[in-house]
Length: 293
Image (tube, rainbow, N blue to C red):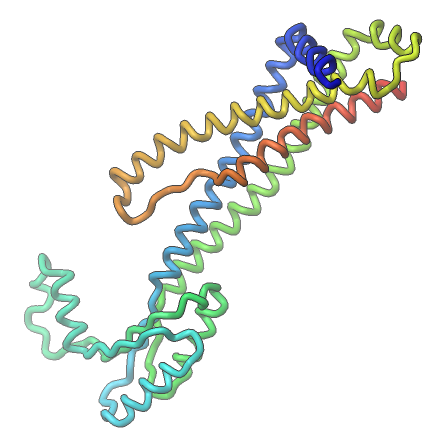
């Protein structure tokens, strides 16, 4: 039953190659940009989550704490909600670690009158402590303990990174909305031009009793095809770009540290459906105006 309508839609696309080509390329560019933002958000979220899984809180102690108080402090920290493991690091162990990390700059430690580093606790959190609010709350609770001098977990640079990601996300939403409106407008005008070139045929069909459904359906199918092809081309371009960029990342920039991910099948399906919806919506707007006139 639908085959004649599909055939008419394909014939219209072939007869108006240039207009449809421009529309499909426009949709593909819009999909490329929007899906690139989505891909950026997916991978940046994965980076943040990997940092969260490896995040640790360093609690630096005040000097000259008696052993009894140190044991009591350790139990107090361990009892806090969100603390998974706790490890005491003496000032000597901390200095040895630093020397091992800076073994090529060993001259920096020559002539030190005393060890300048404090004793500390290395605290790792449970998997459920995932949000920044929980991490900050736990760090604040530890810092409020009487024998804690300072708490450090990279809050400044992590906070800056999260704010940058939020800014990109906001820009992505704004650009996505802009491209959505622009693409619907372009599809609507393309279909309007196609209808205008066939206005006599449409008028004759209406005179002989053709229903609006019979007239509209091929154009709706044409819009769906335009949206689907545009999304396919845009996603292919995105995958090619992703392939070359991820190869460079894995081989040179951060080998073994982070593996970039492409869009999931669910996300790709959503992009395809969304693009087809854009094509259909453009046809709907154009046909509604034309048939009303």
